Length: 93
Image (cartoon, rainbow, N blue to C red):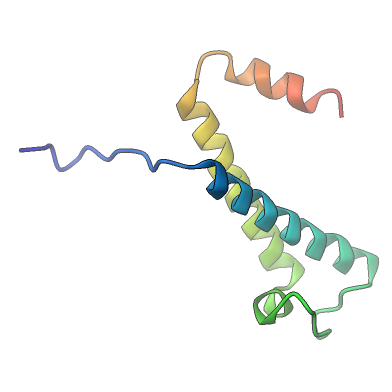
């Protein structure tokens, strides 16, 4: 019998990471276009009803949730040297 408190982490495939990256891009574009004044909350969009219903605040929250999931998965996969890898990835920008 297995221990009920043990939870195995979800397995992410290459396609699920691609879907999350695409979703994160769309959310970032909603925020960008809203800040530019091109995408007001009442404007209908060709991306579908879901995107049209999102405002920039909801897009930011979704972006941060996906980013947190990605960071957590990266840390869980290889915790040693995590902060150095993050610094080297972010610092050049």
